[in-house]
Image 1 (spheres, rainbow, N blue to C red):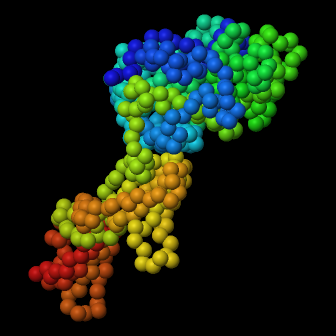
Image 2 (tube, one colour):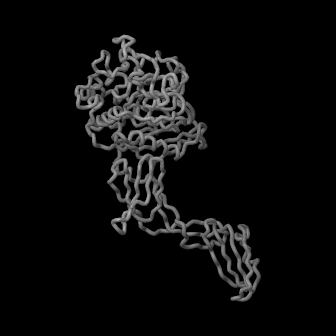
Image 3 (cartoon, one colour):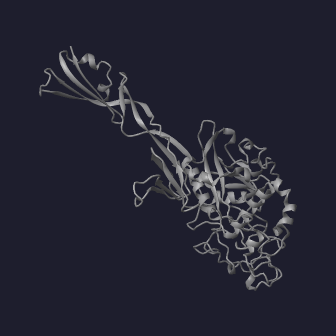
Length: 511
């Protein structure tokens, strides 16, 4: 069943009551209508859509509202990237390559692994098409639009545009946004700003996992989330209205400035919510008394990343896991086709065969080059975002420390080995290890290398200490007439060195 189809309506992030935000980048939310069609049945099984309040003192409100049917389950999702360039392979808005996409892999894993959700990097490709360079409306980015052939739900797909996603602000002005995530889907789009941010990719994937903006429905008296977290206060609705996550405070789309936020991102302004059931002087109506934070990943602020730790709350994680569990139990196929086994996190994303250091054979090609054969070294490359431990598979004594290398989330780890080793992913299990076998076939890798220098020793009498030594430069050592230029009736030792230091030596007598 193909889920990502006909995203028919656009929900803008800003409302007519929100001022001072017309010049800021917006983030658009687009909902997968196939899942929307099942909303009524979901309301029966899980009362969040019906607006029921928590009814247990043994769990957190979010834990009651979003029960996790598979609390011990780890979810690992395949992740690929598509990078847009023009038809001759050039980007206009900043280069994107392995470093940039791997940083996104790192940040997604760092933000989501606390909820038992991981991403396995499956590579990236380039879309070299000048027709796809430029700005696109969010409603153009579904499977019926120009990127439709790159959209599927068998993996998470992040497309990095050479342009921006367009939307409207509260004054009906066209404004660009750095990212878009389709709710209930595996599809997100980023521009260059979004792709090089530590917060925006995780924000858009949050939309994919059924998270709203934390200021959702602000401006509506009836459906906005009220500030109060006291369930006995009139107007309380924190567990189901607006954003629908209890432990994420009610919010608005304020600009980030010193008047509204403290240096660590807490709101300190004087705004009131829309709880008309309480007087304007009531403590329970001031946002600063239950302060939202600008560092919540589902908030939106203008400009570049701020030096504060962006993160999701535990309640947001519960909503994500609840959504995934519904997908699994009801067989909707929204995320399940993109899922893979947790054992994949122990595997490299790329294996490369490289020549070793010391040459085994060197053969002169008599054309200024040599064929140099090296022992084959296997390089395994491991993605960012995880804590790895690499151990020798076999040790000589029980006391010997088997650890020969480690990798942190910031490391793009490369392990060059020619024998088996064990891998641990501490984020999954600090004790579990998986054996990674190395192909023991002792094959050689042979390459053609140019000569760069040489040395010629000559003597007329064999065994004489009277030697003439001549250093040869690159032109001389590659000269095809070198032999013809040598004097007759002399003994010679000719050493030629390649670009990697491999030596070809010939001993001969010219009559």
